[in-house]
Length: 418
Ligand SMILES: [Zn+2]
View 1 (tube, rainbow, N blue to C red):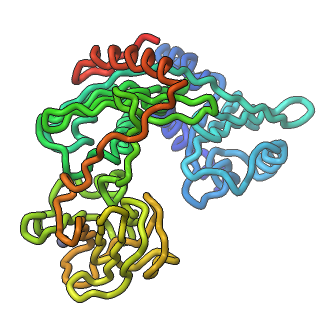
View 2 (cartoon, rainbow, N blue to C red):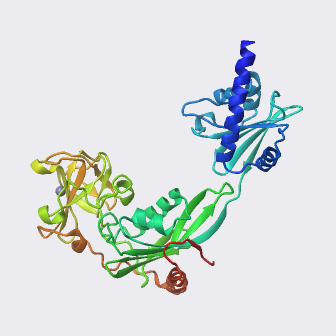
View 3 (tube, rainbow, N blue to C red):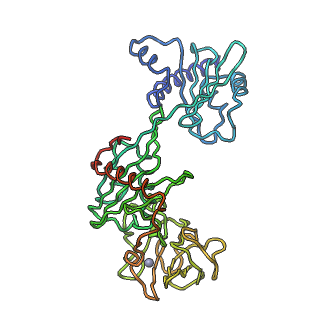
């Protein structure tokens, strides 16, 4: 008796959860029927229980919560040969369908990923599994924005129709494209602007994923940087400016990846750290352990303790350039005096060693022995030109894509014509 009443309570709770969950979950095929029935105040002859797997929770425990007996759960899960028990994500949505509230479930659906469902169905001869893969829709969108505080805020403003995750992806991709030319965490000023033409994929659930950026412009301090992606025969693509010169250069403009710093620190300047003018360096606030990258190919000229700098790394680049990275928690494996490092390689980790009050990276650029402002010292001058054989194709692509970008208006996402 006790068991029965406990189960009745569970059903009541589950039924209310199901109503809430149905409202919150992406469209399921049963929903229209459920909506119609509830609008008509007719009790459906079936019951849909929607739940999500808790962290560290087993599927069996979720199924038990949904009123599925241990025996039935075992039978159903035995049919799930396509389910790798070690790769079940926490938060996985699960739907349990019963034809009437007290019966054995007729179907259990596991959402393996955004676009993959595993349907376990009870038949006269036992449980079967069917995998369903939803088709994505792809298109190309135009986004434009103007900086008033940060690049993230400008993207949020310029691409309100895109979900937050897609806006963040787009922001990161944009920063990656211009990482040899602009330090997106420090160089942007109010009034700077961007335009982006990017591929978008939409899952039938409505989930959005941003694909590659096809073309972009970034206007900083009145000058426009252009980027056009040109795909090579081998499928790899590279970004070129309007003149057909590669955007890659000898130096990256910042020793920390944009995506590693600005998601934590929205401010362009850390309030308790000094500015470049006072101490001939640039401070990047970031959490302890953030990877620090070599901004160019170099030989390590120093990797050790240096009073105020704490753990200091000094890199010697070609043509009289030296870069310094201070206050690091540790050096990366193999980074010692005399070692060769290449552009973008992780050389150490942000810390707060030496004279430092908070985790940050102190970064210096020296040219022929004198500290210089990285904004001028690292200014990239034209990269390698596109191969002669590709020039014709590149130029027609560039003309078409830049013309599409011209049509981008700030504040709205527009689907571009193909
Ligand atoms: Zn500093």
